[in-house]
Image (cartoon, rainbow, N blue to C red; front, side, top):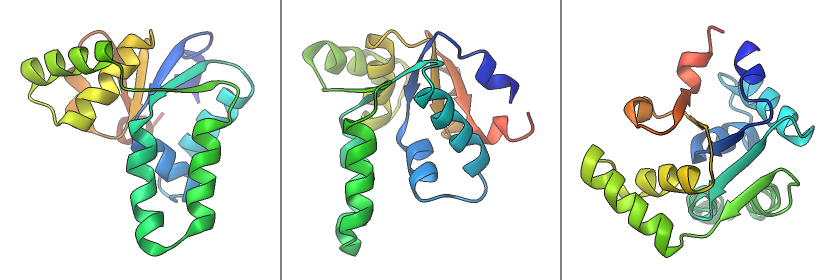
Length: 148
């Protein structure tokens, strides 16, 4: 997968959807996200995400009473050598407000993008094609990567 080569020695912002696809083994995206997390685990690049990601990924397991799935999400977000979950600091909140004002994004999306920017990411992995025009990051939408 050539797109992964471009990520080497970089920092990549991670949106919620790719993590869900990986943990829940979404058949459409599994090859892409499995390769991404494998490369991350091998130290080919560093990943940053927001602690908001934990909030977003835990909703479904909590509703379903799926303690095992919730634990998998907690573990991958909190216990991976090359993945850092950044809290929503004042700086991230203010950056998110500027992003929301300029690009009319929802607050969670603006926080994720702001976290990637403040975490010094060069790329942002998502599957939200609306985020493609966000400046300061090269947005990688999984749907666009399927053919590569």
